[in-house]
Length: 144
Image (cartoon, rainbow, N blue to C red; front, side, top):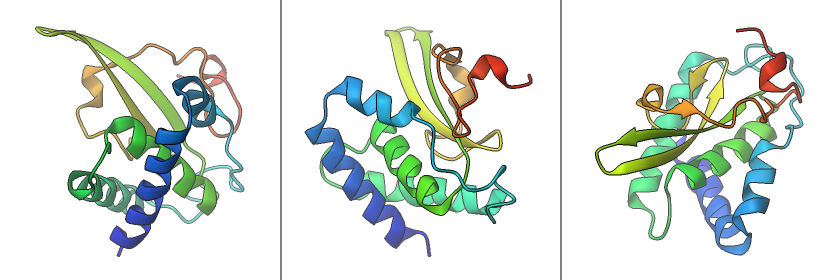
């Protein structure tokens, strides 16, 4: 069951979110991970694992008191994936809507969304050129 580890990582992420300034949180989210595998499959992380992680983090996030939004869930997923040695990409996007600009953060593993909900296609990855995936390659270095 993924709910217990999701709770653990969400509580750690909330604590970091409260303790660190936004610039440090973004630095940590963008930092290259200690991924031990070249890809998610090599780390033993399949599409079903990503879906279980996404659902568990969202469920825990809805029930936890305090902040549990996309940034906290991304931070939790980043730490969880890093611990498992799974490479990932952190994304930060924006969209223009009737209420103005909106921002969103999410984590992808092998091009599949692990945090941030499934509506991330509505957001333009505005920091992608400056961000790195967990292997340390910049977004501009990755094949399209």
